[in-house]
Image (cartoon, rainbow, N blue to C red; front, side, top):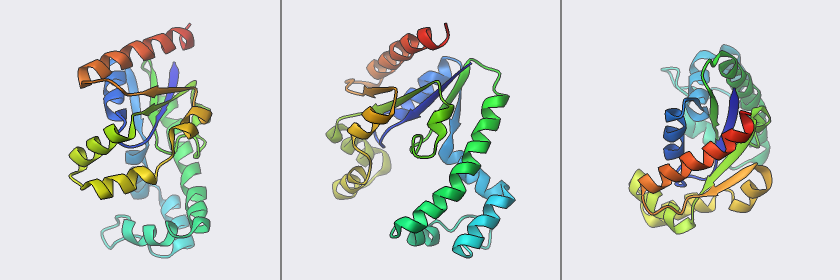
Length: 198
C-alpha cells in the first residue's frame, strides 16, 4: 500500500488531483475535514483547547473559529501552542485511517503536511503549484472574492521554494484545461507509483 502526501497553495489544482487519485483507487484523507470532525468527537482535544485558550466553543458545540483565530493568528506563541495540541491529535487520527485502509493506498491532503509531521507517514510527498496569476483567477472565481482579497490570501501562503525544498516532487499546474491537467496527473502519478509499488 502506498501513502501519498499531497499539499500546495490554494488555487493550484489539488482538488482535481485528489479526484484523479480517487479514480486510481486511493482513499483520500482530507485533513481539514478530519480536523473539524475531531473537534466534535475528540473529548480530550476539546478539553485541552479550552484549558489552553478558554471557552473557544459556541453553545451548539461548534468551534468558535473567530474567537480562536483572534487569539492565535496575531500571536505566534499562541499559534505554536495550538499546533502542539492539534498536530498530535491529527497524526493519531491519520495513522488510524491509514491502518484501516484496504485499498491501493492513501492520499493525505494537508496544507500543513510538512509542518505537522504528517509527511513522515508518506512514501512520497507531492506539492501541486500553479503560477500566481492562475491561482489568483481560480480563487476569485471559486470563492467569489475580489482581486485584492484573493491576492492577500496568496501572499500569506508559502512560496514554491518551500515546497521544492521539503517535498519529494513539485508539480506545477500549467495545463490549459481541466482535462489536460487530469491527464497530466494520471501520467505523473502512474510514473511515481511504478517506483513505489514495485
